[in-house]
Image (cartoon, rainbow, N blue to C red; front, side, top):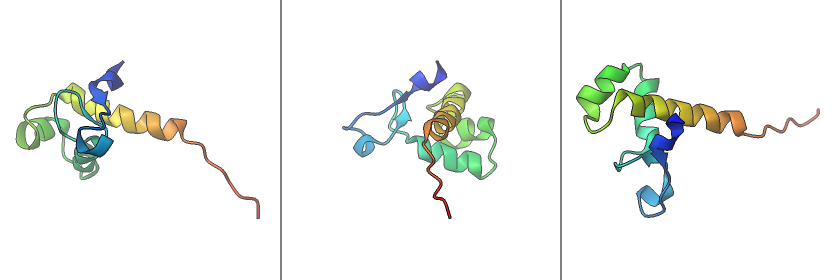
Length: 76
């Protein structure tokens, strides 16, 4: 599973999810994706210590998080 590239460790960034083997928080990578920066540029210009597969894992992690979220709709 690609998401295995994401780790949560209470000793790193206060338990924020990070790319495995780095101290790069998932949210930092996702902010670049949100800004429209290509995966190639994220790896080459911003975070040369990660791979394109790591960027994909960040996106998949966020997708899985939203998919598993419970939504409670209040009746009006």
